[in-house]
Each structure stands twice: as C-alpha cells, then as structure tokens.
Length: 477
Image 1 (cartoon, rainbow, N blue to C red):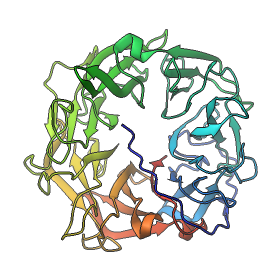
Image 2 (image 1 turned 180 degrees about the vertical axis):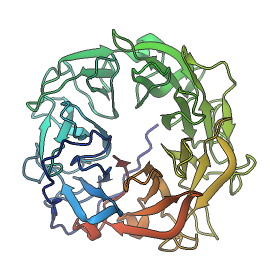
Image 3 (image 1 turned 180 degrees about the horizontal axis):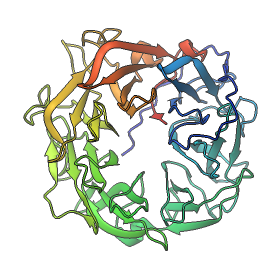
C-alpha cells in the first residue's frame, strides 16, 4: 500500500529563490549527521513534491533550512529542484522530486550529503525509471549534485522508491540502500562514493525470495550495538486470501547484510535506543485498523516497540502503544492514523531517546483530519506513555488553527538544530492551505517539547512557489 495520495494538479505560479548561507571559516567540518555546511549545527531538508517547477506540475523541489545557535534560520535557506543550476535532470510533470529523502556522508569528507530518490524519473526512451541524486554538502551548503551512475542495476523500475544510508559492513564508509521495484528489489551501493556518481560496488538482494517480504520501505540503524548498521525492510507478505504488512531485520556484518528475524509490520519506523541499554530498538508505526491482515494495527492506529539485543532482537515481548495506553493524550478513535509518521530524538536532554508520533487524521473540535503529534518518552524501562505530550494547531502557542484536512503530523522530525542538547520537534501539515503545506518548529526544553515560542513557515516564506506543493511532505536532516 502506498502512503502517498496525489491530488490533481492546479495551476501554480513559480519563481524560485536560493539564499545560500554565508561562506564559513576554513575550520574542519563538524561531521555531524545532518550538517550540510559543516558549521556544527544540524540542518533540515523539507520536501515539496507537488510543487510546480518551470511550468511542470508535480515536478517538486526540496527546501533546506540551516541550523544556527538560535535554531533553524529561515533566512539561511536554499530551494533545490531539477531547475537549479548544478542539479541533474530537468523538471518534468509528476517527477515528484524530493518525495524520497535521506542523508549521509557518502564521500567521507565530513559534510552530510542529501540523497534524493526520484522513482518517477523516466530514463530516456527506455522502460527504466528511477534516479538517485546525491547533493553534496560543503562549506557553503548544498550546491552541486550527481546522479549515481555506476554501477547500476540491470533493470530499473522506480529505483529510489525508498532510500536509507548506513555503514552496513562496518568498514567506516557510508553505504546507500535503495528499493527497486524490479527484481532484485533491494540494491545496496557500497561506499565510498565519488563525486562522479560512482559507488565501490552494487549488491542486489531479492528480499521476496529470501524472506517472503517485498522491499517497500527501508530504515537503517544499529540494533545489535556492534557498530554496524542494520536495515529494517518493511513491506508485505502473502497470507491466505491476501497480503499483510510485515518487516524483516537484515543484520549488518563484515560481509554485508544478512536476513534475520521478522518483526511487526507497518508503514513507518525508526530505530532508536529508547531505554539506553546500548541497543537500537525498532519502533514501528501502523496507522491501519486492527484486523487479521493488520495484526499490529489498532483502533485508530498503533506503535509497536521491538527491543534490540546483541543477537538482533531481545526476548522481551514487544510493547504496543495506542492512544488508549495509560498516559497517552487523546483516545483511540477510528481512522486517527496514530503512527502515520515517526521520528526519534532526545527532547529534554535526559539521555533517553523520545519518539514523535504523527496522528495525521485525528479529528479536532469537529474538524476532520486536522491532525496532531504525540511525543512519547523514552525511559530505563523503555518507551512509555507516562509524561507524553500532544500538540496540534489548537494547542495554545502553536501558530494557526486546526482545520479539516490539514493533516498536521503527516511528517515529523526530531533534531537538535541549535546544539543545546535537546531536540526540537518539526512537524509538517501537507494539507494546510488547500495543499500548499506548512511546517512548524517547537522547541525542546528540560521538560520536553513546548509550544511556547513555536514558529511556522511555508514554501513562500522560503522563496518557493505558491499553491499546491505539499510543502513539508517529507522531513530529514
């Protein structure tokens, strides 16, 4: 099942603006994940995949907002599309540039790079589709880009439908995993990469043959605590009279990824150490209602925590959290979509990783699908509903007003952009203003996320096009 429902394109205006950050001093880059310009502050990339670019509907773009000591600074930003100098390709209708994003230092220079999966990109007059565009980080930010050109799979069908980075073989170089809807479905490009678009090696993995699960979404993280990245492959497996969501953990090793245990299915996930025991835990979001086909769903959606261990998965029974769990704000109601989106970060500086949960279809005060975000706290006993908080556009201090079909919480991202040791909550509402979309930033404090001083901005705030864009559809950094 695909999460994205594309709306009919409307007639939009354009006129792109790039306001590049000032050139930094010649100090060594920070090496921080998500720091594109190496100044020691994490940055955020925001997708607007339905934006009209150069007259082409749904061509799409990515906005980058740079972190500072004061947090994200909308005055230090870039708008990047296939109409931007230095970016491969040309804007075409329904390319949806930016709909798939991840970050990682692919060339090992200390600057984070931005990887854009463009699964709808048609390759010349062939039947192949899908491109992987790497926009290289540097002291002045993201300026030049390369499509990965070699080695490439023999057949490409929506290559880049999902993308994830990690060091899967533990050699110190960043690798890139990408789904390919042609067989084999999972391609792993081994780093290091060069700026000519060359990877060291390409490994094809037929996940359906190995595990019975197709590769639809990829999530990387270190579950086993051995310093090698593991890869959660999320998809569907065949059951009697149909299919159900299911995931499988591929463990990293010196020889690459090897298939491991099956875990809870869903449509989004993060790998994060929520109990601070040194092992990454798999947090899976399943916004579907519980049924025989969706065993890990729940009324209004559910989040399942499968705890990590040295061997891969802990013997501890996975924990399922819904809005009916003690301490979680709200109530489980049909079609809330609790678990639609997930992100991990320490929001209060206590050393435990917290989880932001998008509840994109929650109704508020009679407003259908207005949306909200719930932040669950990590603790020594694991992820808990105790002390969790909920935010929406009806929360005092949050700009705007909850309206039907805003889908606030369609995307969530926790990141420490101001380097104070506490993650800010960034949330997107793709439906805001008839699909134009907007993004909100809420600060982290010693007591967690607060609405005090919350800010919001849109495509036009950053100099991007107005109208239908789904600005905030995807967030990364």
